[in-house]
Length: 184
Image (cartoon, rainbow, N blue to C red):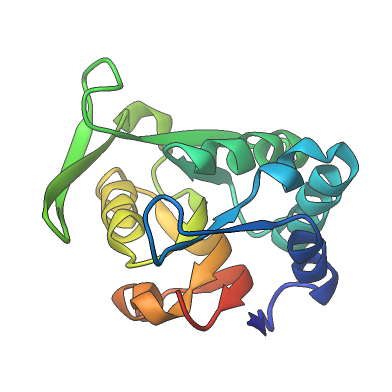
């Protein structure tokens, strides 16, 4: 585990103190890192959002939450900062018109979509989600936001599984991960 140099160390410790590790879930050999203890601890969750708000205040105009756990982080952060939230969803979840982008998964393809009128031209957007793994969803979402006219200012991930190559897929982007695990 490493600590993000950009974010306060206290946020890393806060997340680690409220994280549950479940071996062999959802299948044998996988170590699942469960954020529900953090979310259910009102004080810890509020402190996380306060810390993220302090870090990003004045640098962003909107927060883009990625389906679905990114919504849990994006909504209170946007409210705290007094800015809007952009919802980036899986295909078929938003009424049209939508912009969409297809991207490759390990076994097949997926699609992310957003309502273009929710993105203000030239707005500085923070993309936020719970886990950075292979980077496919984040990369597709960033492309989609930029097609809609946003400037993706930064990416924030609660957890990063460094061994899966997501940071490399997002090369050249400003990525703040609260906790970075060297191995998946």
